[in-house]
Amino acid sequence: MTDMTFTLAILGRPNVGKSTLFNRLVGKRLALVAPEPGLTRDRREGQARLYDLDFTVIDTAGLEDAAEDTLERRMQAQSERALAEADLALLLIDARTGLLPLDRHFADLLRRSETPVILVANKCEGAMAEAGAAEAHALGLGDPVAVSAEHGLGMADLHEVLKDRLRELEAAPKEDEGEGEEEEAEPAAGTLQLAIIGRPNVGKSTLVNRLLDDERVLTGPEAGITRDAIAIEWSYKNQPIRLIDTAGLRRRSRIGKSLEKLSAADTIRAIKYAHVAVLMVDAEMAMEKQDLTIAAHVIEEGRALIVAVNKWDACANREETLKALHDRLERSLPRVRGIPVVTVSALRGSNLERMLDAVLGAYEVWNRRISTPVLNRWLAAMVQAHPPPAPGGRRIKLRYMTQASARPPTFAVFCSRSKDLPEAYLRYLENGLREDFDLPGTPIRINLRKGENPYAPEGGKRKLG
Image (cartoon, rainbow, N blue to C red; front, side, top):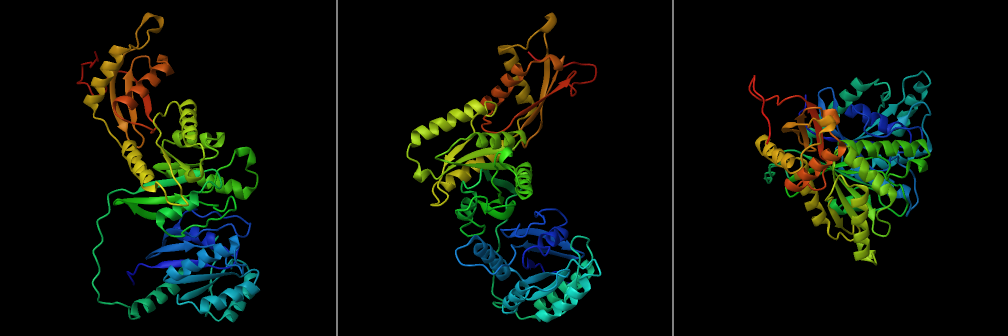
């Protein structure tokens, strides 16, 4: 049994089940799956497990014989890079349809690559697939492994073939064997999940590529190139970061096709699991209603938010644009004051370090904790300065406060008649917390609890003031 870690790339023409197999290996529905061919455009990585094998698997765009200067050619270039970076590659064919000219064309290409290739005949769950699986021998890549990615059939056979190929790789002589390697720096505890979000064609993928200094995700003048959320491991100032490029979000009324609905759902999911979201807006159109809708969703999910104003180098009326943007944020998101706004040019790489510093600052605020004694002294002062109302002649009493959790900062306030405390008083407390404890731009949640101080000694009541 091998302890070798390795990278496995899944390749093949469109619609042969690459993303379905990817999801099967990682054990989650990370990649979008739909009947439309060409759904996957960028390469997606995930941590996979197959019995006793742990490895990185890469889902790729369908291989197509594409002309130069087209989106399809750029998609194929991403697939070719995945092949070059992988230790092993799977070439998938559809056993039900049999071999097509594209299968033969790309089998020829893969035979000439330096990466070992394993032929996999997918969709082998029915009798119709037997002829297609047998026909696959003609590709000259050895015996095909018959699987059904959708139903999980043939995974044990795939496992055995992978182990055999890994033993061959381990036995092969290594280049530079014996040379000393620099010891890697100890990574900081905790990985920051950073989602890059916004409307279509505002420069999200361009920003990701500029941050990575690599053409890692597809870009181009066509709107809506990115279809599913692509996560990339990265780091900045010793902070491990999981960078997530997402599909553009349009107004719900404009989301028509089922494929676009899948992409939008994937972006919403990325926001849900993010720690910090960078909302990219176009300097010439900031901030439109859809930008504010996306920002409000980030806040509703309890994530820290940064606004990056892109294409700033092409902005004519800078002072007027920034003032209008800040005014719109204050009016439309009054509950989250102090959202950091950074002007950038993703294409030129301008001001990106300042944006990343703002991301780290927002992450620190989002994780911040305040001690219970400090909170209760603060609450006593707030109550004294502005007492709660007294509906029916009986004053509502705020007896105790504690921070229940961080990420985002969430507080519990124990009070009498909690249902009668008006929303305006909660806003008063929330604004006071934001100002007095320096919590800009992050959601703050205050949950009311009925009753006395739960931490007071038995038989005693702890009151404020």
